[in-house]
Length: 371
Ligand SMILES: Nc1ncnc2c1ncn2[C@@H]1O[C@H](COP(=O)(O)OP(=O)(O)O)[C@@H](O)[C@H]1O
Ligand SMILES: [Mg+2]
Image 1 (cartoon, rainbow, N blue to C red):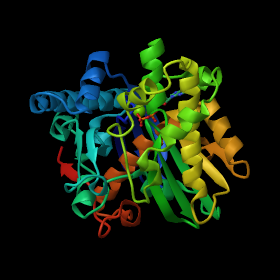
Image 2: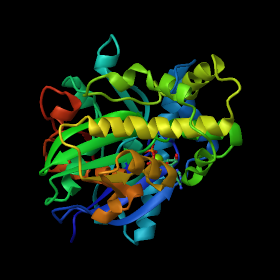
Image 3: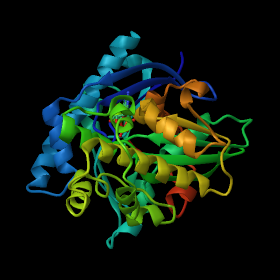
Image 4: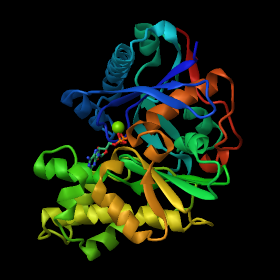
């Protein structure tokens, strides 16, 4: 029987829960089935509210922790139905959980902490499958950023024959991994990918995201605004670094707009936000010692044709493509990474990420909740 693993993740965008089933018996993980599980609007709102400091957080967090654990279990059971499998067929689930606060050490005065919720006890209880969760905090305890973790998986799926390739995950936040001759050279969050664009179009047009970047395409980049947004200190920080909704959120944008850009057209703001993402991503890629010959995009933003066109225009000597070329459709890379991380944990393999996260050493990541 094949060793099958399930990965669950709900990212910064809070768009849905991604669930992926992988075959762990092959050298490179193979995606066998996938499922996108909806998160209802009230729950999305409750998550977003916990991502910014507010009142009575402990009760709100406790309730949401259990609720999300149940939703992650539902996502798993729906995936199993789709794949015509039962819990007996699965070795383990790797569940990332929903990040509600990420305070990496070097960017705050206190020691860092990161918090993902979606109770793994509930997942194990409702699915009868061993669940691995809490992947990031051991790395932080060892002095790391606890992020990004995707580079380890990117390395696992990187083409062996390529001199230098990069993986660009376009979620709410963007992260780039550079792999040179099979080894990770660097991996860090570059800043916003879709998060600010999502927030702006939701507020102005009441739609969840800018389909294919069409609204951004209809506007013009405002260079003064672009320069001001690019002056955010995060962009100049050296790696290792990681970021989230704490840094790049709608109130940050709105404060800047209120102080000098009141007359700007709404679509011009969107065009400028898209250019902010493409330029800061391209800057991060070209700052590497070796510029990659190919960039494999993944995450929902890989569907934003305008963003990919913009990147291709800036990085004219680099091939911009998606992970589909490597056999994993862009929407499923992160969930596959979680399934793979669960397998690494059960096999007690260390995750070779300390160079990326800045941790003192490589650690075994994740806690096991038995079935
Ligand atoms: N067709 C599309 N056009 C533009 N953007 C898209 C499209 N499909 C998905 N996205 C973007 O991808 C985001 C979700 O990507 P995802 O990788 O799930 O991010 P996260 O890991 O933050 O949840 C959406 O919020 C949206 O911004
Ligand atoms: Mg998502």
